[in-house]
Length: 311
Length: 253
Image (cartoon, rainbow over all chains, first blue to last red; front, side, top):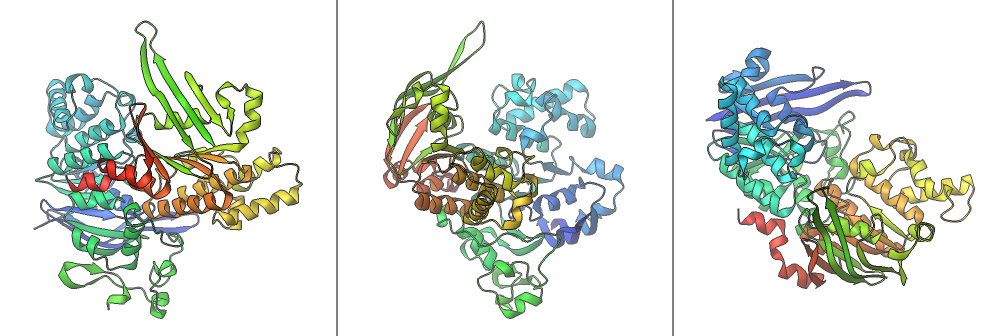
């Protein structure tokens, strides 16, 4: 059963230069206990998609479409109802722990904050629970660490603290935004292992541009480019048999695949190409690609792709 | 080109309970002219400190650093200033390594205006800047933009253009793509590789990603807790330290 069903979601931002179409007609389903990777480059709209789900965007954002969670449309909830859902049912692990953690608040208190709000526990009980959660994310000497401030934590430990905050109210779905960004190989592996363990019975939307991380943790991946989803499929199908030329280019630019870059750069989200959005950078572009915008269509084996090469 | 002998850098902290961190602890190696030495290691192993020591951006505790035959660890500030243009650094975060209040064109023109490349008039400077902008794959319209108007990848290109304007012999690249996306990373790394060949540069390439280092380097040094534990031909070192490759680590999760 689908726990989360995103249907024709648009998130636009009006700016003096024009309308920024950060998320454009996105459809995405996440089943119970399913882990979905959302892959794409900086500025393709993946963080905005995550923020749209938890409704943490600036009030200027124009959000359209439907986000159905357990039969309820999140976008139609009153702010008060949303507040009781956020953190407890759907939690977000924000990117950049260094700037996302409050620098003047003890780490333990930051974890306890949500527990007190949602769980109705008193200060001492919440603190005790926070220490337990810190232990569960493999922080040694958790009692002492809970009383420390974020600057006393290393990069990997801060990420663990972020995960602890996300887990604090035992949500059924976690949106993790670039949880392995800026970590070295060893720490990255530890964080991936940890995330895999703690989300065993939970759903997760993992936002990342690290294909290896996605491959080791996700069931399915969605590849995002210039605000829309270009390809969806089981993680290994997409990695072994990437269909969209962008996905292929993305994989080939990995250091382990020869570091071959895709020529050009991503289009501006204000002034998008009228046909296929990848057309100006695509080596397989045909005449139709310049004028017609391809729809995402199912190919074989549950893989879907938005490209005229397959129609 | 570069010869380092028994280089040490200790940081001490605390007034009453003196604690000493041996960031770089007796490191020796050399880099031949035109070669790239890759430096890999986990966060906190001292690789950034080592890179900074090499350019004497921080003072070593002991040891010697020879740059093209001169022991730069003994130079005074004035002598150092004369040799500095020949050695440059690319930092991790391109957005914060450019002056936010300077237009891209001004940033790239600065080395010319300071007279590091001999005297040149305004028109010559403008022409050289446009030339460099093209070399690093930017467009002429970028000249009048500010760093915050460009992407991280574009800013790293500006950093490269500015470094080329100084025309150095030796560059320390400290995780130049750490904050960039994979496809942009590939573009920048390939650009560095091309520029290195074209301008005959010697490079110290610092990264925690073995796969990237292997791609960029002729030789690799592996650093652990302030010491170099292995150094040699890049294929051989990569083979011996497969555990530092992220992909293979994740494959076991």
